[in-house]
Figure 1 (cartoon, rainbow, N blue to C red):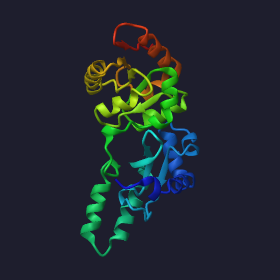
Figure 2 (cartoon, one colour):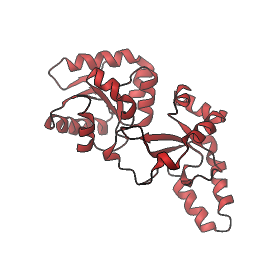
Figure 3 (cartoon, one colour):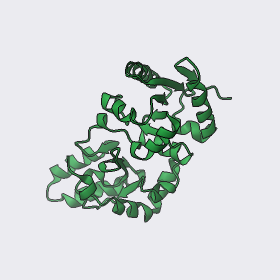
Figure 4 (cartoon, rainbow, N blue to C red):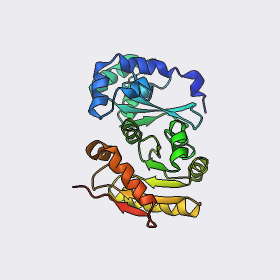
Length: 254
């Protein structure tokens, strides 16, 4: 794998985000605060960037770091206001090779993109920043995605990591066991999220962890919950569940 920590100046992406009112408006629409720009949790790749990964163009960039804080991957999410200009940038770049331009555009139009090779099964998003809090609390919230983590962090919940679309692996367990032996799952409240939670709980229990599931209200993601009901309700429910013998608790809201 290429050493991104040496080859990539993430500060340029942060500057591009800082200088773009459209992108800042977009992240605000996702309920993300400017604190994530100051903390370099987010960046932006301009549509005409000459960056080595062209499929990052016109995307909000999330840096992915290993447990030691080294940059190992870049995830990109489309910013709606930049879709047309980014497509135009590919035609401008590859105007003498229309087939190549068409190929790049088709790949870029996929909603998500991440540079490879990045082994999700060996890393947990935000563990580098969350590990001290996880050790202090002796438990970790596990969520699904980057934005779930960022929203919970801005609401004051520091002991949170994300799986980012992969299954909980033995590598994940080995990483977490350095810092805690209690896990509270906050996967999406749909059927797929519940099924994934049950499989993860079994794996946790088989590997000397205390695994718990907080069932969020239906159609409520972790970021939705803390925005609508506040972080303290989530923390209180987790502490209540950790004191119980049962492995799950459904949060009831009025």
